[in-house]
Length: 320
Image (cartoon, rainbow, N blue to C red):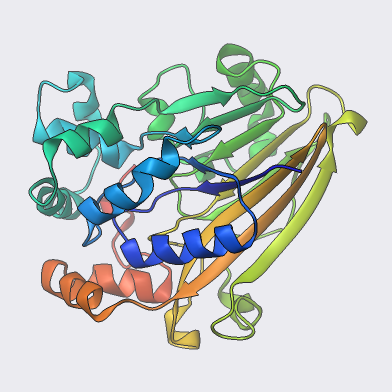
């Protein structure tokens, strides 16, 4: 049964990326599906790019661009896809200043390569179900596809007709969507009649469940597993998964309880019409070099966001 690791929102965090790559290798992953936002605002954008680019150029790998990738490219070269300026305009002032640091810390060719990727893409394979991926949420407008949050659609059941219209326009005959951008792990399932969150509150607010996130403190942990046989459901069924964020999770207090940071991702195992999904949390510590850079480059609220797994910035300051 082929295994794929879905990663999103690394944001230049090399220590988190290394932890996830080690864990996914130990779990037998064959290829990486990366959903976008690679480089900023973390302290090691060039090293993150060098570390992952060869993995994303392997067979069966997927490499999407996120809103940060497009914004950063426009900042570096305003002739790059001029419409990408909208990604920059939608960011708060704090995030723009972080992006300027990254822009000056990495080669233009690397920035443009990360940005010159699709924001959404169908994964072609010979088995069911059809798979579609987007950084934000599938959309006929490719830039909106990297900017709309999945939680803007919640509760999904109230917008089922809209989602079906989007599917018909950009992702016909797909039953599995992978999306990133919100930095929150989530799983939504439409069985052809009703929408259900596979684990209520999962990936949205884990504060009340922190003791079960990393029970052994420094052990990579499975947060949730689910299995679906799509042959048992109509073609109208749809599973929407968000792997969360490798570099900047926003779904639960972590460091103050465990003394470690957590990187989030998920693993998919495909066998004909059957799918097994494993949501993972991987603990890691910052190397001293990384910690020094974080504290030197960024204000305290950004470092604290990594520590508690929640935004200290106002809603207006969160990039869309």
